[in-house]
Amino acid sequence: MKIVVIMNALKKYHKDMIDEAAKKAGAEVFYFDKESDVPKEHMDADIVYGQGINMAKTCENLKWLCASFAGVDNLVKPDSFKNPECILTNSAGAYGVSIAEHIIALSLMMMRRITEFYAETLNGQWLPPRAQRSLKDSRITVLGTGDIGTTFVHRVKGFEPKSIIGVSRSGVKKDPLYDEVYKVEDLDKVLPNTDLLVMSLPSTPETIGILSRERIALLPETAYVVNVGRGTAIDEEALADALDHGMIAGAALDVFSTEPLPKDNRLWHTKNLLITPHVAGNLTLEHTVTRNVEMFVEDLDNYVNKRPMAHLVNKKIGY
Amino acid sequence: MKIVVIMNALKKYHKDMIDEAAKKAGAEVFYFDKESDVPKEHMDADIVYGQGINMAKTCENLKWLCASFAGVDNLVKPDSFKNPECILTNSAGAYGVSIAEHIIALSLMMMRRITEFYAETLNGQWLPPRAQRSLKDSRITVLGTGDIGTTFVHRVKGFEPKSIIGVSRSGVKKDPLYDEVYKVEDLDKVLPNTDLLVMSLPSTPETIGILSRERIALLPETAYVVNVGRGTAIDEEALADALDHGMIAGAALDVFSTEPLPKDNRLWHTKNLLITPHVAGNLTLEHTVTRNVEMFVEDLDNYVNKRPMAHLVNKKIGY
Image (cartoon, rainbow over all chains, first blue to last red; front, top):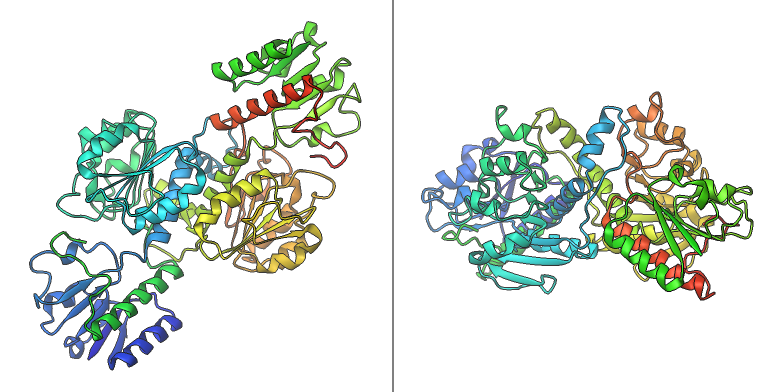
């Protein structure tokens, strides 16, 4: 059995973890930093862990692709796999800590107007205090209650928000820290009572454009929007209009429908918009890499012992 | 009995709260936005709530000054009060929420390098991800375990830090969320094991220069420093040297020994230093104002009924 690992963020101890699990599984492991480095002779890999979108498309022998990322929208299209029987797992669950910290940082930067203060002090300006807002007593809506949303909830709870409402496909309350969890069909009822809308949705046919112009109009003037899922979830033109006209208080976007955000995109100049260049969840935090490897090792054991995979993607629903 | 209130942040319902308490106390209330607005005829006030540093110096009849701020270093000097018997209370306890949120925002901005990403996106640059750090598994040292430090601890706990060590004058552990609380005498033992040093100390003879050049040298290269107490607590030249030479990872300062920070101060150009213009704790958050008024009303009741004041300043120790 041959395992090809394509990741450039692994430290020595991460490779040791993989090597040990591979040995136990009776498999050989080959490491590469990027997909284009993998030589032809390894195109017969049984398992790929890490990047592997091109290998999935071309390798007939591939039986399992473990994506080192969470958003697999490019791997659930009809022609994503040469071998239609190939199993796909992802690494949703590894990025919660990193992305949850990013959400809280961006939310507080907006609410406390640190965006303004910091931009001013970068220019050597010392300007007077001005009205600020707080996570305390805020009504928080979490659209997408998976690992990211729920890891965020566990962190934001200590800030004493007034309410934490989850909105998900199923509407099932899987964690007691949510006050309520509603189905996506009820989103329109929740939006008018939202001070902070946190979006952490995968890109699926159901989530594309979910924050439409009509729904943005349902948010109160006091609302902040943070999106760390996929850029396609928001009607970006409508959001820019709402921000430029002060219909909502602010927004922070880490993801965009086109990335990198094109030079001539109006979002660069939209009022009260905080941009970060898709850096909420990468393999830039050691914790994320370690958790990622742990999840692969766990599923390698499942794979060898023919148990159900813990991190299996449902190709039909897309996550 | 005459009460003069000097605050410009009060909303109608805050005045209603004060008026009701004053009525119960049989007192008349007069409101002003700033101290220079108070006419001569009110210099016979029995009680001043809010700003009042000059009234304290000149009003013989003043029996109680309730400062609307927490740092009373300008009110515990020998000639601060014309009437030496005048009671001084402060509003420590009202600012914890605001300042704790500021600490977490600044810490995450540094650890996640949002300072860099944001400065870049302000210039229209979309640059690649880079190594980040996390509150998770960090060793946090809280120098000053009063309201601010402890409110911060209650918020940061959810981020799963490795440890939270308090350091205070008494060394008494007043809250179970601290793993340990040490006396200031033991600070040198704690600093080498600190990834994030949070300073929220009042300005007293004991705290001036407490983070000296020698102590900065005890911090590991991975350490971040956040100061939201008083600027005098840090040897600013030594901190700038440490930052410019990469001896610590970064610092965020909201307070400075001279404010506004002078135009020619080297801190404006120090590496990995995040500056905000003393905005962590002002009356800019509605919650802070409400809590402030509640504390005054509580002590007005104590004052009238000759019970001990809840928010009394010990003029000898300075807080």
